[in-house]
Length: 304
Image 1: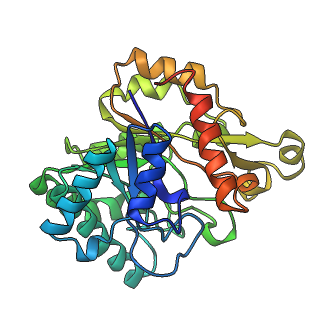
Image 2: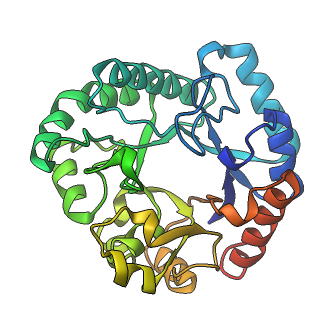
C-alpha cells in the first residue's frame, strides 16, 4: 500500500507548495482537491490545487513533471459535490464540473476520480435510487470512454441543519452499496473507503472490506471520536456533530490495526490517503502541518 494525503487540508497552498509538503514529509502519493474556483459552500470544500477548467496538455505535462521531480504520484482527483441536489441549477453545475474533473484525470493519466454519488436530502432512499438511474449512467459512460474509474466515498454528508434530514450522499451503507451497484453494474464504479463514517453510524467497518473487496478503489484514513455522554443526552436522531467529531488518525475510535490488517487480508495494494479533519489543529499553518506530521507518524506503524 502507498501512504498519501488528501490535499484539501492545504487550502491556500499553491499546487507546487502542496506537492512540496507532500514530498518533504515523505508521502508517496496525494489525492488532489479539484473544486471549482470560487467561494466554498462548506468546510474543506472549494479547495482547488488543479484548475481543471483551464487544464490543457501543456499544463498537464508541467504538473506531471513537477510530481516526477518530487517523486509524488497523484492517486486521484478529488471533487465531492452533490450531483443529485434538490436544486436543479446546483445539480447541473456539479455534474458539469465532475465531467471536467474526469477529463482532467484522463489527461493527467491519473485515471481515478474520488467523489460522492449525491442525494436529494428531501427524498426517500427509494426516490433517490430512481435519481441514480437517471443521473449516473451518462457520467459513468463518459468516465468509461475516458478510461477513468470513479471511487465513491461512503460519507453520509449529514452533519448539521444544512443537510437535514437525508444528507447529501446516498452511498452510506453496505445495504445501499448493493442497491446502487445493482443499478450501476459498471466495472469503473467503486468505493473510496473511509471507516470513520461507519463508527458514528454504529456500524461494522471491517466486514464490508471483505464483502466488497473487488470494489475498493481508494482508501481514506480519518478518525471519529464519539462522545458517549452527549449521545446519551441527544440520541442518534440528533445532528451528528452534536455527539461526534472528526479527529486525526489515532485520536478517535477507529481501530487502525484491525482496519489495515483487513486491507492486507484482501490484498489491497493501492493508494491510502490521510484525510485531515480536526478543529483542534486548524488555527494556523504550522498547526495544520503538525496535524499532517502526527497523522503520518501514527499510521506508519501500519503502512510504510
